[in-house]
Image 1 (cartoon, helix red, strand yellow):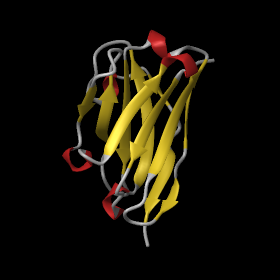
Image 2 (tube, one colour; image 1 turned 90 degrees about the horizontal axis):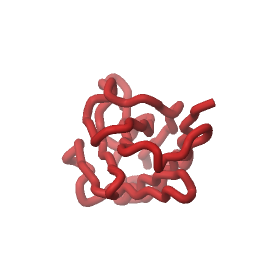
Image 3 (cartoon, one colour; image 1 turned 45 degrees about the horizontal axis):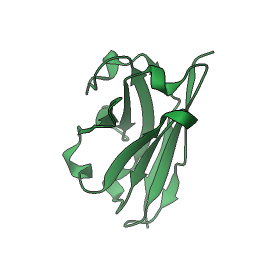
Amino acid sequence: QVQLVESGGGLVQPGGSLRLSCTASGFTLVDYSAIGWFRAAPGKEREGVLCINSAHDTTYYADPVKGRFTISRDNAKSAVYLQMNNLKPEDTAVYYCATRNRYCSNYGSDYDYWGQGTQVTVSS
């Protein structure tokens, strides 16, 4: 069964850090070119955050996270990581990882597989 699983979410104070993980089962991430992170904040539409391709190039889709969020992938572990630093209350959302076998895209409908999401809450 093809599955993506996110982990690492939680409650953190403003200015804090979290590292989210996205692991794959039933397939290997190396088989998929692009892995994207999306988020859905309360009352808002899901938005693309950033994406990493097979060459480990990063594309940012959310300007507010530039300089604070980074993405990396470990094909040997079939995992992708989202390092989030200097978190702000507006980063509060459910974070999802998704894969597609083409170039990075900001459109969620372009992705083939999704995880169930992990909640990130930034609050004092």
